[in-house]
Amino acid sequence: MVYIAQCVTGIPRYIALNKTSLAAFWFLLTFTPTVTTGARPNECDVIPTRDITAAQTIWNYMLLNHTLRKCDVIMAMGSYDVRVARRAADLWLDGYGHWLVMSGKTGNLTKQLWTVPEADVFRDVAVGRGVPRERILLERESTNTGQNVKNTYTLLSLLGIQPRSILLLQKPYMERRAYATFLAQWPSSESNPDVIVTSPDVSLLDYPNDDIGPLNDVISVMLGDMQRIFLYGELGFQVKQEIPEAVVRAFEYLQFTGRYSRHFQ
Ligand SMILES: *[C@@H]1O[C@H](CO)[C@@H](O)[C@H](O)[C@H]1NC(C)=O
Ligand SMILES: *[C@@H]1O[C@H](CO)[C@@H](O)[C@H](O)[C@H]1NC(C)=O
Image (cartoon, rainbow, N blue to C red):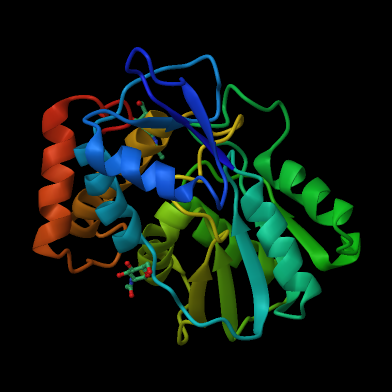
């Protein structure tokens, strides 16, 4: 459930969004100039409908919609979103992998949030859902996506594990970057393992919560990731991605507003 804040006088400030109020939500989104969503009921930042439309275009582009199949290793890339750990654990419990790697020390978003490595937080989530400890491998050094990939390779090599297939777990708007980074940075001299990517099944408007923050933060972080799709493809940190014109336009529009530039390089 998300909350729609309507920052126009005379209209109830928050409308809880469930199935029956979905119609009301779309009505607001379509017919009012300013609508905002967020999980903190005392916030009332205003996000124009046009921004949400542009953000949705980028969100959809970041999703790869890979078909899931059983892999040797499930690898969750650490972040402040424990829903990624939950999804990874559930996939392990459903038989999608033999090993479950939790990878990550800190990132820009968890540095100030947690005192233990992301890998440990993610492990605790997985153990809490019933994954046996001895099937969970921890990679506790990475501070960015490239390191997640390289350090996990090193960890698995030390344990004598040469995966033929890897199922990557990331946040929805990081699927494309996780995939493109893996293809560029997995250090194997032999052929790369087959890699597929997935993420928690959450929509953009359902994504904000108390850990992640309100929608404008989500859009800012996602825009920073979109910028890295452009930059890191050029720098060789990631495999270059085709970027449709509509996605470029949505990015340029959101950049132009100046409201979501907090995570740019
Ligand atoms: C993935 O699914 C989303 C949402 O259904 C869609 O908008 C997007 O174009 C798809 N992406 C790819 C690469 O197929
Ligand atoms: C973390 O933030 C710093 C400073 O804002 C930035 O230079 C760096 O690129 C960021 N790292 C990542 C992985 O986003």
